[in-house]
Length: 187
Ligand code: IMP
Ligand code: MG
Image 1 (cartoon, rainbow, N blue to C red):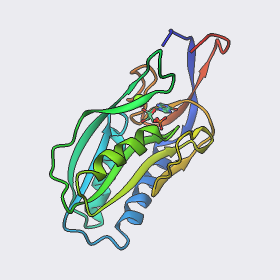
Image 2 (spheres, rainbow, N blue to C red; image 1 turned 180 degrees about the vertical axis):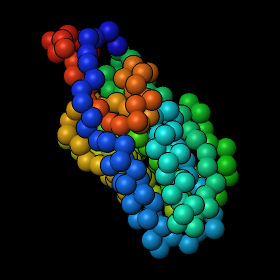
Image 3 (cartoon, rainbow, N blue to C red; image 1 turned 180 degrees about the horizontal axis):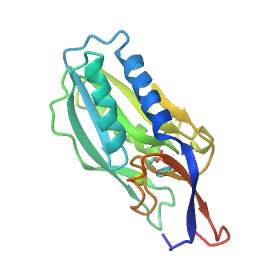
């Protein structure tokens, strides 16, 4: 990606709002959940802060998951203009008969999450549910909805709480919008 000038706007979602919503999400997920084979799989790298907070609320809701991670990488090539995600680091826990919860930072075009679910479904879990902190439905290309959504947001590029722009700004304790100063420049 070409370097673009940008600035980070004011807070869009505060740390307090994040904390409250993550607490609620864990309660929603706990309702009716009595699995003794619960596996939470975070999609790296964007989900690492969200997942770390979420599973601590799991404890309060008496859910005792095993936790694993997978890395999805996106391909681009001259022959396929679409970014095609693939698994670049697989989870290693045996998912046979497991009740899986896949956790991602943001649902954008839907390619990453749908590919991750397709990949994990082949491992023989009993169930797969999906959870995303943020959802940008306006950007969807592949039909894909998450079972649990933290916040629905507009079609803006956001950073913080694990989400990056060009590898940076994951450490922000809040979510902020990125404003690009040279919108005319090519991506
Ligand atoms: P999808 O495959 O288009 O749904 O993209 C999902 C991935 O794109 C996420 O896991 C993020 O890594 C990245 N992404 C999409 N939108 C944003 C954003 O607004 N900020 C930061 N990363 C984003
Ligand atoms: Mg990312």
